[in-house]
Length: 466
Image (cartoon, rainbow, N blue to C red; front, top):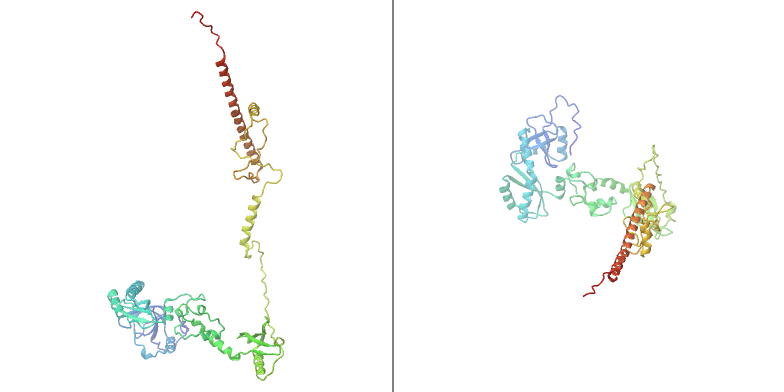
């Protein structure tokens, strides 16, 4: 987390000598102190080259300068004599390019190191790799439940990467701080932004704050209890001083009242009688008095007579200065549209009503044939129109049911045109039936005529001389 330098805009005395120690920030939350022996003018955020821990140089950002560094050193309990590493120079373009190349290798190096650790069957998890700015050293951060013998691993890693290797074991919280993430509150993790020292967190902190002892809700991404449980613990401890530690049942003349809950900051305690759902709020001072009376053998009459009246704040509805025409404030505005659409579909599927003609004849369906020849001949002479009804009666479908009635059309002209087409189709089918009925009678007459010719005696005279 960046520290605000509130002394930067203040005018210093003329004989003031700036503090030579500066604070430099590296990858993650790692911050270290360095001596600016050459008194180089440095500003917060600049990239500088500093002395490495085991030789060489490293690249980091200036995070703090001036008198605030002295305050940070006191806070971290770092004496001035222990700060020995120096500031070399401001980072040049070549230093920055080499530093970026080293940072690009960290991801690939971490995965290769994990593969080597799995091949050796080591119970450890390599979580992060930090290259030095000059690309000569790499620090591997790992987590493990116990001690790990990684001597063989270091040999293989040195042969693979050709750099100096440093192994550093960290805890679960330090791992979460280096990797970062988003907490259940929706903000970035405290350990990856501003929290540097990790204090012990116990389940007693949750009990004091009346929190449910659910490990899934109390644990953070590191698997340990959340550090934020300690943030308000002191405030709760101060408020709990006026509340009795051991809350016993209150004995009254009506019965024994049991404790249900406590509002720490409002100094209220709720009690209830057996087989009653009403909770009786009492002040903490009155509860102490009743507990003292019970120790003396005295009992109050009824706790309901001493209940505190709770003031409920009325919810004031905000008056809008506009008219809700579209209905955007309604939560069910999207549910009404499909309902209206279904109503329209139901109206469209209703049967025909009123005096509109019904179309029960399908186009292209042949008309029923006449039962006899005599009824077919007049149909031929009149063009198949005499004796034909205007509409064909409903025919049963393949399933044995009546023919479905078609929905009413909106346009009357279209209805009349389609009805005329159906009539023409019926007339054509009737005329074709008349021709089919006439054909058998003509064939029968031709056969009778041939038979008469065959049976008629010949008119030629016979030769009598033979």
